[in-house]
Image 1 (cartoon, rainbow, N blue to C red):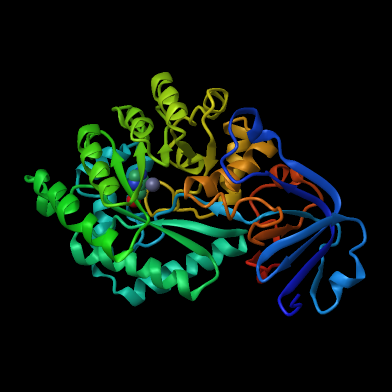
Image 2: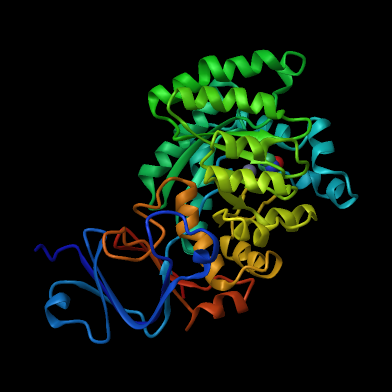
Length: 417
Ligand code: IZC
Ligand code: ZN
């Protein structure tokens, strides 16, 4: 056995992790493994052994050894929903938002997403790599080891492809693993305002086939919402994506319930996102389809909206994930730890359910639960050593980064204080 790439983490105060290779559903979402006094061993980035108490001498020889000092260790966090790549910000809309102008009203006036489309079209690939790379560095220091990233601020051929190229480059140039999503259906661009069918045709006949053929994205997503894309349009776009071998996601019920959630369950989509306004029928459809509900509590906070019905979803057998929704409009925060706090207090999830929501179930939302999202033999050694003695502590404190050491594929990627 080669020892060159062996990592041993000893003296783990509490090793807290969900278990399994698929999403945890219903009561299982809260039934995580919690072991005191544990150690973990990884070879070439894969977990090969774990145990309790003293680490056997033979395992330590030639290994990189980290003493966790009695701290909490969890799987690396998976942020399953971000709009990572964009030019500019939208602080000029703050005063309007504070006056109570609704999100969809700002968009209808040509602001919102369309404002970020202007600034993203003007940004070069290098500008975007620089900016999104800095965001990923911050996410990593907060414990995020895998991140989904959407396009959707180009809405024209060249800028959508530029965003996807940025995601591909960053996936190679920095430690956080990225999952790319084509979100051409984020809004109808100004130049197609009076010919929306033509924009839909551009996506279904040109962009989706090209992106699938070139392997530029794994997923296709649609913003199904009043004044954006209808459920029928969303279905047309997502069926084209499925026909070309992309997996599908859908932004639905963020503001109004217009049928996107029922569509998600029927396709079925891998995940349905937001779900603030989800109805009983929508929730039942997700359970039937095995679709992961990706809930975005920091967006509810920032838009002053209700919090999604996470407890009802878990009770109905829908696997729940929690993500940041990092974007320049409805959630200009990339702090997944903050989203975890909000999930605990506003969705009334337990710390155990919330941990599953940002690890195993988040990995399932991007089709990586076979490899990521839990700490057990055979899975990738992506983990966080926390400045915390137990799991409750990271939900009890809030507003500061509690991650101490972040390990990606068996390598220390970041160390904080
Ligand atoms: O830029 O406003 N909801 N898309 C759907 C967003 C929020 C991002 C944005
Ligand atoms: Zn989103």
